[in-house]
Length: 339
Image (cartoon, helix red, strand yellow):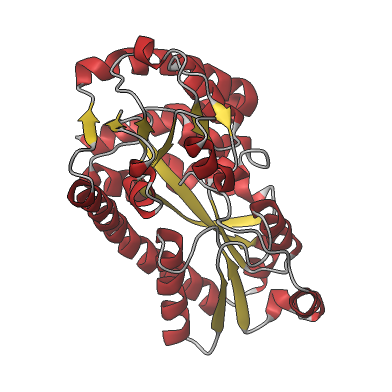
């Protein structure tokens, strides 16, 4: 989900004081920050996680929705410092901290078919094994990685080839790899915070953007563009992490509690995200019947997949040998999930 905070609120003095004076790492009231609202995919996962923790222990979970603790970078700093026990943040924002995580931004590495998506995220070696030690190096215990919906491109004009995208100004998250992606695809990408996107579309500063259907519908992005194109290039993916020092200090029973809650929430959101994505598309079709919705054929996707090799090379240059190994394993996981 291609967005930063919907609104930015700095931590108020009383809340900051409470965070700093608490014994956060060992408190029974666990704090959980995320990049979205309570009714969004990250919020639904967090709520299910909270329900499982509280139903099976005396612990409580306090959820901090988007903006409550500042920008994404602020929340991550607090999670690493132990002021937060849990955080949900997408690779588009953690890439500067964990370059290998940007593997989830490389085009055509993840599936888009719902059943294949479930197997890829539940059983994939890369997702479930290879990232653990990498996140640990940053003081984070990786609990879950899940998709929020297939990325779709909305533009003013139709495109079916890289040549069609030439000159189109496509807004992306502030990730160098996403800029590489749309440059490779033939467009002229512009990195822009989420809060500036709607204004950018209205003033023609940008000609389009990418997001899952749920966000396109929720923010009326279909009414600010003319065409929505399914290129099949990936999912909007996010990761749930715990502060590693906090996690290591838990009893064996509480570690099992956290792991079980994360898996219950993962199973839940893998189904719900598909439903939300379908609902978002259905609402667009109902409310905006004249809106053009295209799905590129495999033949049409082929030149985009070829150009994606340049993005893979850029990723490996930044992420090194470990990034290359993860990328190759994700390809194997994709092939296994598709069988």
